[in-house]
Length: 194
Image (cartoon, rainbow, N blue to C red; front, top):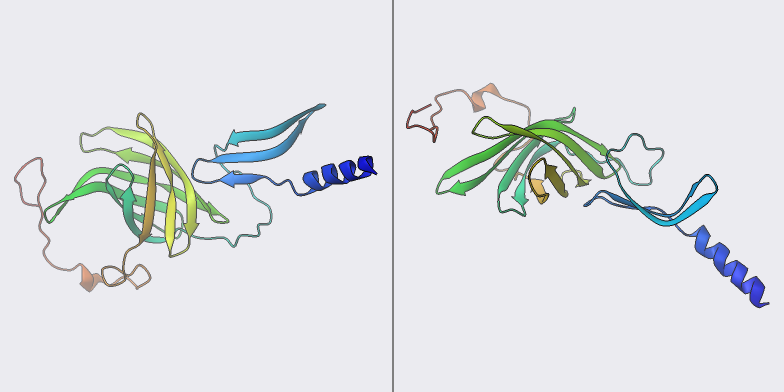
């Protein structure tokens, strides 16, 4: 009887073992992996990129929209993600009434289920740039969170929410009258007016 209970317990534990993915650090934990005749238990791997996904129980989310929020490094980030996954960000800090841009990113953003992944180039005011990538979770129109890694820098976490529709409505049709007129501003490298 003890042998039967032990066998049932082992079968039950293997039946309910599932893979789990941590989007914040890109790690996939797999209870058991068979390679040839060897079996490896409690395998943890870091996912470089997601190549394909079959059916998912999580509805596909989208990062499309205009987002704002903070990096854990103290900088503010504003991100525009288009319907084709192309995106642009400004990273900086506010000083008085001015937003001083420290970096500008251009890249591509994809989602599979509720996991968002990005590849981009970050440009700096001194003319240099670095490659970067990010991974996280997206909840359409509600939140975008994750971790971003840039060559030569420590990884940072971000937490974004959509801009309020009172300041900008991404879903509103473009209207040329909204931008027609005179615009002014300053380059901080000189006192020249734009």
